[in-house]
Image (cartoon, rainbow, N blue to C red; front, side, top):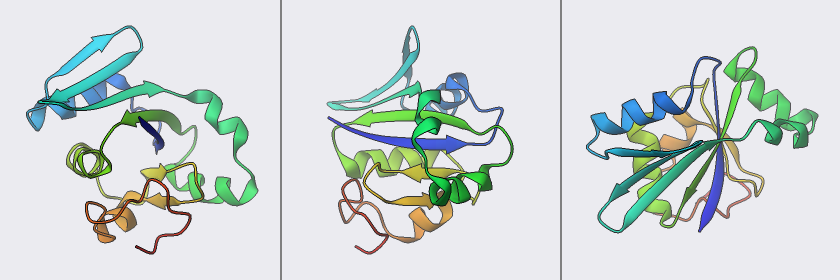
Amino acid sequence: MRDIFIITPNGYDLQTFAKAARGIGWPPTEAGDIVSLWSGDDYVDFCEAPDVAKHYDEAEWSEVRACGPNPRFFCMRFHDYKVAARVILSILPATSDFILDNDHGLILPLHRFAALKPTIWDWTIADSPSP
């Protein structure tokens, strides 16, 4: 199981992820504070992760500020990075105000993430945006 963080503008919540998932044919299952998406044996879980914000240093906050005031922090748990990349790029806008953090040094706005062809290299363990 792997975890990454997604930082969004204020106003996003777990219901937003669930609604977007329905639009791509991954019906969500909600259990408490977790939204799970299943397709066959593949899955992606989302939960809120507000405590993550405490662990960012000033350089990381300079990236996060692109989300605007009061960004929202979510954890995404998954098994297959290719599936995770497809889900991320299908349910979230590839814009500069949505940030992906792999917790290994890679913090990117989604538009840059999309340009890196994330289904062909393991971005979950990279510390730079170079495949």
